[in-house]
Image (cartoon, rainbow, N blue to C red; front, side, top):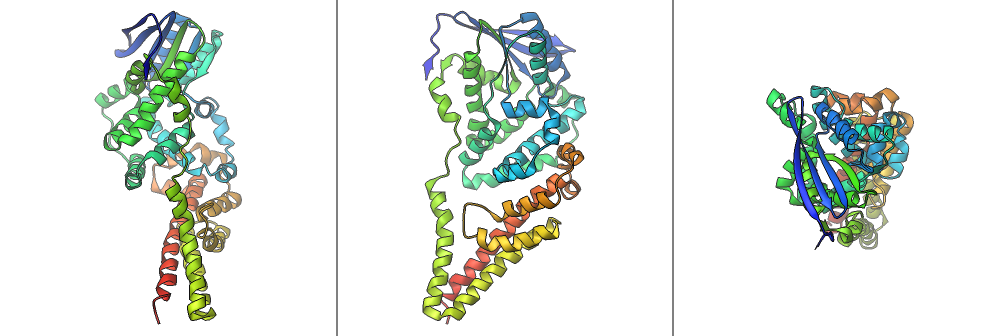
Length: 409
């Protein structure tokens, strides 16, 4: 990386006080451009007031915010989520991304409710104030789907379970928030705080969720038009942006904006397993006759179908979903292109589409076990997860039976 080409590079930290909470405002000068970096908490009333005050007083040429297009629409046009097309989400294979987003937003919303402010209010206030003053707004964050998929694919296999369990446990954390903790939360970026904790145990995760985004945000802020720019970002990103903004990372942007392809090894494994299953059935037919091969095929169908149907039944899916799982699992288990969970989730969404009220309340219901089964949107998630797990179990049972038949008399 190279030092940013500029005759003048300087930094000046100033403190602004709002209701006894101190918020840092950092001024960075790059040549003839001045960047006013405002660190905020995503669940703080004081941050909302601070952002409005700074933009109004500074009257910058551009306001940058730590949002991408999807997150901006999600928090600024909340009715868009009410009209969520869950079937389209499933078809585009973005159901896991939606779940991860919902878990993170639920964690943040739970804390926000204790303070009395919606998550991301200061970012929306920044865009609103800028628009009222006729100031252009630039969305500077990386696409949230890219971030989540990069995080998942960069996490080693043996740590993926730890990541999932950490996210799930955060939903059911009923620890009381003390007044002292509330004051700390008002001065920090809650999601970045959560991710920083995960990053201590999983450096790969921190690199994607924090470090890469610091670099991305810094470059996009530098690209903003005008000689004075106000950038509103979570407090957890300020230190990283201050470091990255003084260096030239422009050549890295293309790479960190891409979703890493699946490893060729995993692609090979994905096709190798069904190829071995089919090959074993063919060999059993050649060595031991059509009857043994027929028994193996029957066992494969029943093992996959029943295990997947049991998963759907535990999720209390519609009978049509259970039948669809039974029919699809023996086929989907022989291809890595689509899993049985996508089929069952789609059928469940088709026969029991989530109501607007349930979509609105999903981030609240997700924190209770009862909510997962009573909310139709969350039931679609269960219709994706549990039948998928059942299909995996059926694949191993069926595969074991087929291969063991080759070595028995």
